[in-house]
Image (cartoon, rainbow over all chains, first blue to last red; front, side, top):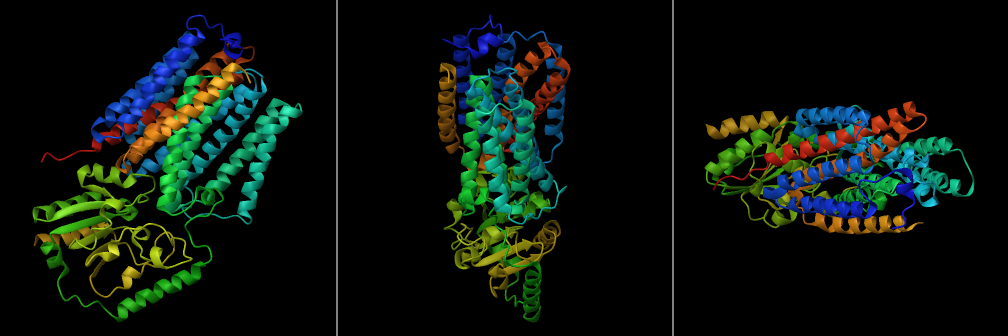
Length: 482
Length: 99
């Protein structure tokens, strides 16, 4: 094989290129097999281990092939990274998983950014146009991923305000930055510009894009941002692989990029948005309703409710005790209240009481795809009892009661009827089809989207338990047991 | 574009397509562990960081570039180790009752 780039730069003698490609292909297959195993819960841990060993082997092969086994600095850095990584993964709480993932994503982006920078300077890469463009792209996408993920992680960790921040002419700024990035990547092909200048220029523009793009996303839109950044971290890795001519990097990065994009698509579909909308910063918050109006309407709901107290003809406790089939719909509020163990206790009690209890999980419940499942699994809920929205949506009308815990927008019937609201058209849980609905929410304020939930104003078959879900659930459990 | 570049582009396209179909089979139940697993995989940039750092270390001006390279190795190793071990930790929690 006529391979100019690598063999010139490295006196690779131990492993020749053909052998290296074969090894890369085998390792990529192992990674793919590992991901394939992740489609079944019982095999998922094995799959994860296989992927991990494929990466470990890839690192060893890299050290041998480039004849750099004897450079001690590498081991020092590897050891530091490994210790920090293992420490973080052992300490992190399950509710903090979204920010952990966002931060790790960012670190992957930073690494790609640095590798891209090296490649652009000709370290580890050739000086051909192809590699130059790939290196510039790696710097750009790496910077977007790093800074975007930092902002996302900061928002999730409540270091930055959770609320979306919109700049004047937000869209215009984003589009201009993309144009500038494009110029910064393409121009050096035609004009000779100092490499350091280009690198700094790309980092500044791309990081501004990352920050400005992410500050506009908040709260319930986070699953989309996290998925997208995950995808970008893979793409950045793959492109830095193109820049330095490493097939394994390209292959694995490509897989990760595709998976992130796939999850982003699922999230977009679950929120009835196109990826393009998200890229241009259309989020699920109503920008036209100003804060004051919102407060007034919320107040008016409260007044209404105070003026016409609900007549509970049947004691709600009796309804729960008599129920034979129950669906539990948890939302992010449950996670904030850390009420998942109490939810499990409630479900256990009801099951022992002879009821069939199922959990239904909306695709965007929580702050990242599948977040709610992990939280419930942590509380020892059997994963066979966790159902997807589409599996249970037709059953709401048949079950005896539905228990909503800290969910609002994902079961807001306004999504079906209220045209023009940010959640209009978003697929929702058909909780409102159920005869008896128990709602454990903090207050009656609209959810993240700012859209009123008409369910709260229903006169019959609705049982509201307002306050911290951990407290209200505890009280209910005591009442049930007595 | 050299032959190598064409091969690499091919590898990228094929991996992306295969990856897309593989992930299609993963149930939403496991999307968080899947994502953190993918995240760990994206730390594969570690390989690039190792190569670049080694070259820089052997080069004429090792100090500055070794620092940058060292940072790249450290952060991507955090990504790899943190990602795989947290994925394992999550997957361990998924249990099924003996019925």
